[in-house]
Length: 300
Image (cartoon, rainbow, N blue to C red; front, side, top):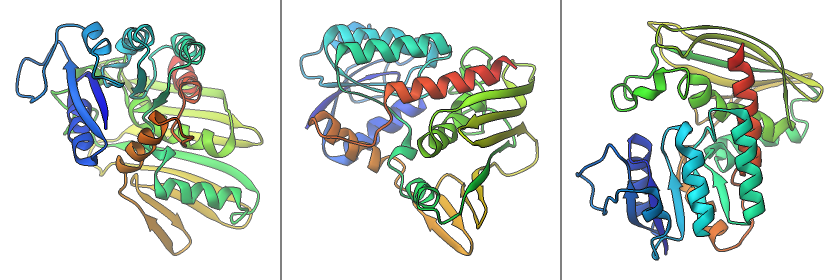
């Protein structure tokens, strides 16, 4: 059993709190969130330092807004605690790269919570590309559509999602798919970017191109009003096309591989990581590169 400290107990933090309890290998110990006074059955302390230095905490889960990640990560490093951080790693590409180097130099066990790292449907898509089932990959496409932003279940609880500093769907949603594209194709480089912004400051429409080796990925994103959310990463090959849609569906011809193991696989892998075993979890270095793609696009 691993003792867990929580930094950030909004929607994601509370969801992870419940999920870790159900998993069986993790014991929530203590938490910090300046907006949380009561309503949780773990002690809430008044500082990040108290979480990181608690003797029963072996790993710290960080789910605060991105601009606060660095402070929490450095506190973990000073205390010698393992780190499991939410994405995006940072809201600034220089800070993301600095964090990745600091974690590597400290030698602590570390991962960033990109569930496509362990997700069955995303692994199937990766296999289709790497096995040659699609032929030679000619292009890739990332399609992002939202009826509103933040989505209805996020509104009110996470107001920072609307602003330019931390928010927007490219950081919150697009980064998942860009991580997967990076896992499949290798490091990418932004070639072009054009975007418009909402009155609150986050991106409204996004048109971008990212080159991953010989493959160009196009990003087409928009807050489009009266629609169902529609997000898909598609690879177009010389022989066939495959897509990851609706978070958990890998579409290949008439076949659909579905998976809803959004958190269980991550926590299984985190258990292995803390035990010193190799895992497919996203590293800080990978997350820093994803952040560099996102932040470069957002500069327009």
